Amino acid sequence: MIFDILLDTLLDAVKLLPFLFITYLIMESIEHRTSQKTRRIMKNSGKWGPVLGGALGMFPQCGFSAAASNLYAGRVITLGTLAAVFLSTSDEMLPILISEKTGPGTIIRILAVKVFIGIAAGLLIDLFHRRKKKAVDDELRINHICEHEHCNCGEESIFKSAIKHTVQIFLFIVAVSFVLNLLIQFAGEERLAALVSGNSVLGPVIAGLVGLIPNCASSVVLTQLYLEGLLGAGAMLAGLLAGAGVGLLVLYRVNDNVKENIRITVMLYMTGVLSGILIEMSGIVF
Image (spheres, rainbow, N blue to C red):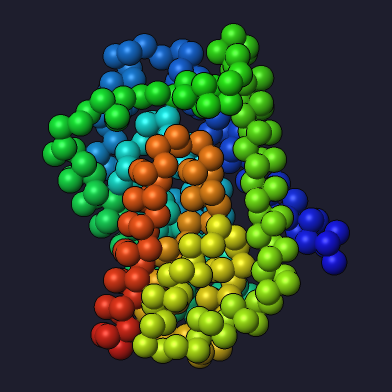
């Protein structure tokens, strides 16, 4: 059983490799080959970043959230863009809906709501953030990854540095995901499902907590419970909005500001729960 869990963990992590490598390659290229003027232009062009981030989140792969975490830690993208990606990321939801032969209309409505909430929240966060006067923390600091890992990648080729960082984060994701998969396996997905579906009043609150688990199992459980009629649309959305795949996991690894990471986590959870409660109260059924 442990071998099967390890194999599943490796297969899931391997899917992230292209996203991680391309992200680090872009960041290294920006750090080594662009002028300060180009960096300022790029930084100031992020006004519509949340719109693009929300749209990318529709794709059934948490690799975008992992890439967004790295880009935000280097301040290549804005906080609003990061939030939009996290909130709209669907992880395993879309493949399950398709495999269960869910109607196209239902799938489109669920995706549209997630993307709309992600974009709206991202734009509001950036609007509020731009009004703050603390601009120092927003300066591009792509080389923070090299400092964080205590390596001399600045002296190496861009390609070699990108590979080194990709391997480091990949191994970290595998280690943590393996432990989470073990815990979920021994605790049982049935118990996790009972916890979410057993309380209709606090459904969105509990589902939001389940969604925060940086593992695809959370999105699988939430989507399956909704399809089986054991979970309301609001509770499902609360968990799926709060869930960012391995995005949060990577953020805590690469972003040194722990307080900021906690604030982002709370923001994700509160946005998901409040949205879920509103949907539950409105009686919306996808």
